[in-house]
Length: 415
Ligand SMILES: *Cc1c(COP(=O)(O)O)cnc(C)c1O
Image (cartoon, rainbow, N blue to C red; front, side):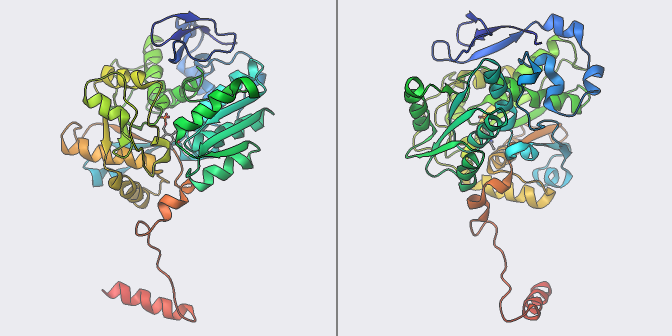
């Protein structure tokens, strides 16, 4: 059973019924609304604490009605890691990383797609399609496989090679498209009538946000229901940032937060694809499509986001900022973070570290503030980006035997 009451159009507040398939309203996304009074009356943080360590422990704030329809691979409760060495490199005394790289399919996309596929399953969908910049396709393919649903994945031809293969590996029909994620989206849209698939594009169905929301719920629980001062989140389509901000509002409403102060939300992009930060800097609520989008952080290569105004509203309500860091600094920060902390930083999280460097320099973040960076994906999925010289030069041991190599190494030590 769920506490969902209805769906609500984000653009004009129109109510829509939740027990049938819904997509957009006036071309814009829908919010899922709950009877929060009833949630408050019927559950407690103590009850949640006794449940299995997956994101489904927050079931009262999730939309699935019939638990037998849930598509799960054990997702949730990712580590929240204190990072003293990386903090010192950035001039921060209380830096934490929420490490989403350890989720099924190696990115936080599993949270959103676990819920979206579960709800689609519950509403009778048999065939789904998705445009993807990378990780969403693999995640959707995996969860669709888990409940025996047919999956179609469309991605740009230059999507990281691991993403290309993983979707097909999980049994999806995977296609390369000559273009960007927006072009893949057009293919999915055009095929809907003929192919009879349900469109799983970011924010075009209401339930992915609910899955992403669990990042905020977990973070709150892991900090004993008190939130950090600042959150940095790498923004593509924006579901994660929007979802977390919704999570905090719902937790405040049910009275679970220790204090009323909410985090400043920092939306982070690369200057190679910065539609949200460009709009935010200009004081706009809607973003123009970003021309010639190019970044190694493939999850951020989203030139136009249908939920742009929802991202910018959350950033502004929180007193945060939407910023972009130089593309060159993103990979070097991801690599530094990996070397300093042993965390598999994805290039997307490198954008957060690059923006963090800017914000600390501008004194927009104080050294003693509690700061959380989301590492949304696993470095292992970005073999092209992390393997490209001179970013991670590997030394070669040459010659007939190890002894030559060891002699080189000793020579290296001496100088
Ligand atoms: C998709 C993705 C993002 C962007 O997430 P949104 O919630 O769509 O903004 C960031 N990082 C990684 C690793 C991703 O796969």
